[in-house]
Length: 241
Picture 1 (tube, rainbow, N blue to C red):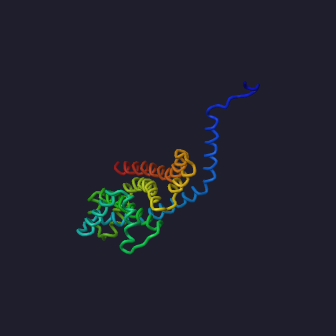
Picture 2: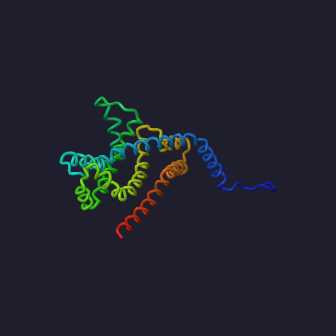
Picture 3: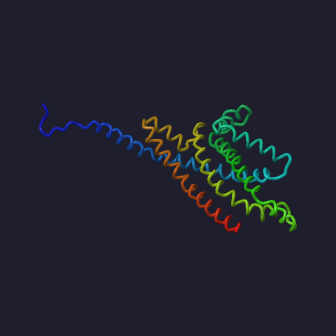
């Protein structure tokens, strides 16, 4: 017989206690997620910086008339763009030691992501250069500008209108691709998520936080890409008028 004032526990009561415990544990793990976030920023930042420099050089060569370097770079770009990034990073990290090149996880991740970034950026830059009307190049040649001067004062300023929006958008994709480096032991935010979910068996909660942290990095770049695209399109329309 039930005592006066006794209430039967609601069926959701144990579940609410459990979720409260999981959220508390996740809050205690926030410092580790922040360290993982910093590692993600470090890997992505270094790779995108180096990949941008290399990609611009490759893109200029790919848009040139070089009979040797152009097809060579084109073949390499096709191979990298046509194979999974996970396979590429495994080759660098696991197979390079077989030929005497021993790399730790962090430099292997940076090299692999730099190479991936350079290949995609190469195509963007080459497309931007080839979008410049041939008449602009001929006019620059007729004024006596050499190849480097044409590239600096005529071709690149016009091609950047085409290059910048997709370039920033590609940065977002490459930052998200950096999550793959967790497969070789880099303690980025994704790997922290995998380690945390072993203690907190709520994948939706843990990887929801991982998704939020990636969103914090990528959203400003997404907004920058949209703004650049609008600004460049307006400038291009005015230029045509």
